[in-house]
Amino acid sequence: MKKSAAFHLSGGKEKVKYTYKNADMWWFSFYGVSEGEDVMKDGGIPEVMTQESESTETFITKDAGNYYLYVNTANGNWNLSVEEEK
Image 1: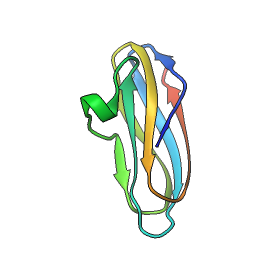
Image 2: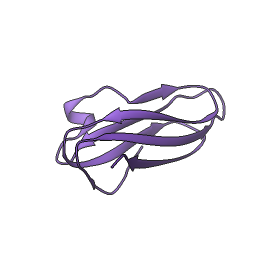
Image 3: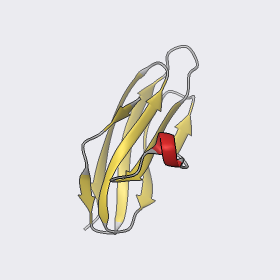
Image 4: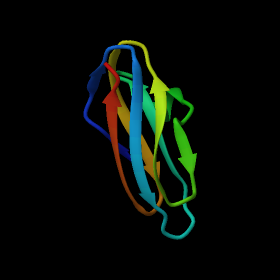
């Protein structure tokens, strides 16, 4: 489980690019979380949850504010980035 540094979003559409290489059939998921909230205490719905190795992108929409990504995986290699549409 990892948390990214906080980043600011302006309230538009965000593209999240991610790559996940599964090792041993574990889950990979990530959450876009408002700064000050904690997924482990407050709960949440993942933006993506998969067991498949993949390199793709998804779009999310968040209100303006500060956020961080919370990544949960038991095993495997991953990389992700967030780009906000301006």
